[in-house]
Image (tube, rainbow, N blue to C red; front, side, top):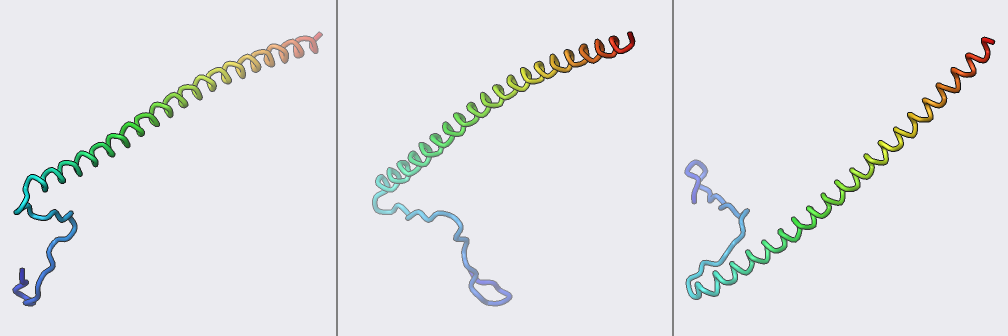
Length: 96
C-alpha cells in the first residue's frame, strides 16, 4: 500500500498472529490449529478453576473472620455491661 501524499510505503498491521496459508496440506494445518486452540482452552480452563478455588477459599476466610468479629463484639458488650453495672454499684455505694 502506498500513501499518495508522501509516496512512501505504509507498513501493514503486524499485531496479530501469523498463520501460514494452508495451500498444500489443509488437514494438517487445521489439525495443528485445532490442537493449539484446544491446548489454549485447557490452559485457560485450568486458570479459571484455580481462580474459582481461590475465590471460594477467600469467601470462607471472610465468613470465618466475620463470625469471629461478631463473637468478639458480643464479648466486648458483656464486658461493657458488667463494667457499667459495677460502676453503678460503686456510685450507689458512695451515696450511702
